[in-house]
Image 1 (cartoon, rainbow, N blue to C red):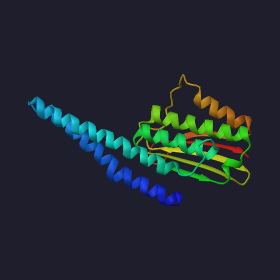
Image 2 (image 1 turned 30 degrees about the horizontal axis):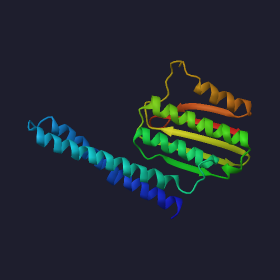
Image 3 (image 1 turned 180 degrees about the vertical axis):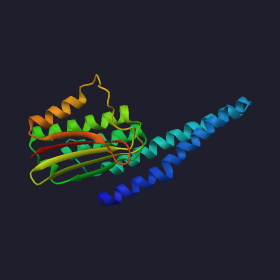
Image 4 (image 1 turned 90 degrees about the horizontal axis):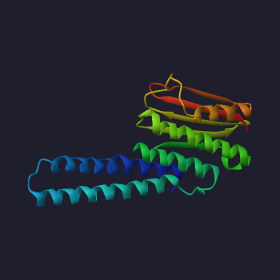
Length: 197
């Protein structure tokens, strides 16, 4: 099965099965408070718990499909793993595009790329209130470029107490590259980190 086929199956499982199972479990939980009979409440609660467990199992299968054959210690494996973890935390199936021979990057550059991807995705989970996330990493034409897009609330103009954005900017500048954070079209945030390879 090709990577595109795995991604298509994973997306269908998420859209047609996992989301619907979670919705049914939620409806059962809401129904339970309307029932006075303790035995009926117990049966409804057990059914909701089984659906929740089944949903977790389906989501684990989705992650395995998305992970594919990547070596989990490689640059591509680590980036894909970070994106999948962020997707699980957001409750979505992330779109991941990896182009060029990212696994052949110099060790320190590969580590920087993974660290920036992880930080950008962590920010999406913590601050964006996003429903979707898209990550693209490309090694081409003597450059390495990472873009992380979401459909959340967009970049905040207020100063933050965190050091993540500053660290991403510094790692780009130290390599003679650029770091940009700006509104995504039509909504959300775009983070771009691009450095010479």
